[in-house]
Length: 344
Image (cartoon, rainbow, N blue to C red; front, side, top):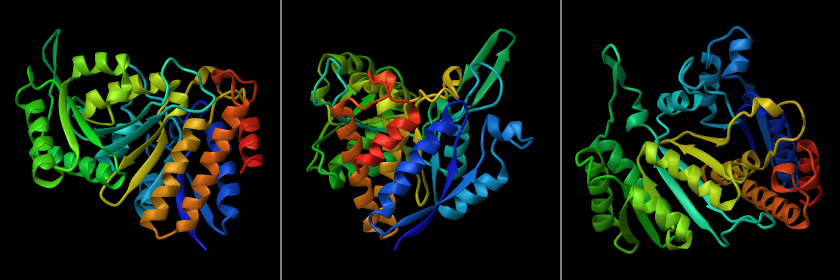
């Protein structure tokens, strides 16, 4: 029997209600396979500040470090002012260098594209998101784009290994090396070298980022695995989410050397918080990624069985029209969770 401790950051806005719904579903699924997870509530973001603590309390960091895994709901990040991003802080603290976002067409979610099946892999620690900004002179500010051979090599190696193990066919690097010849040039070179030296069995191509955006909206089926530096990965992963119905149907993971955090990639939507109308599916899909990760890294195959139960159950709900309002259904947050449990 598996009994693994998992710290949980419920988040802000709709975070607590979608997190409660997801934990209820996951518990029901894993218990059917003789497994159990012990949820460890921790705080971060506005909820931590409201309790008079730091933005990310040391106790939260300690629990995540101890358990080597966490599940995270959406946290608020002020625009243009205020505190820095919780996500960026966690990625830097735990060196979560690989952001992984699978994007696939969902049954029962109608979009203009069919059979989309992409995986976006994003370098998660450098680029313009390094946060190196300063005021050069009054009225003039500068932001520095950082790229190191170590980080570029690391994410390229991870991406090719991931694609190979998942039996994917092709990796495309999206870049702007024609203009940023040093930073993006280094990123592209490292990916090219890893392909040539270690994974020649996989197809490999590079595309300038703006042309790649055009090609994605013309025909996403021409892509398979996309590898990008930090800022591009953030933008493209949201663009690709739009191909399949939005951020409410896309999961996310932040992977480090021996610690990973799984999260909903959408915002905290404070305008609808507490109304039981938020869609918990993205966080539920992220929990499925987490269960598969734990099954692989903690030798707990029963968790993989639980993940498969959840995936089949929410697919069945979407096909039958049992979905939340944002996807054209009538169910509330808790009612959707109950519907998934009923189909496990």
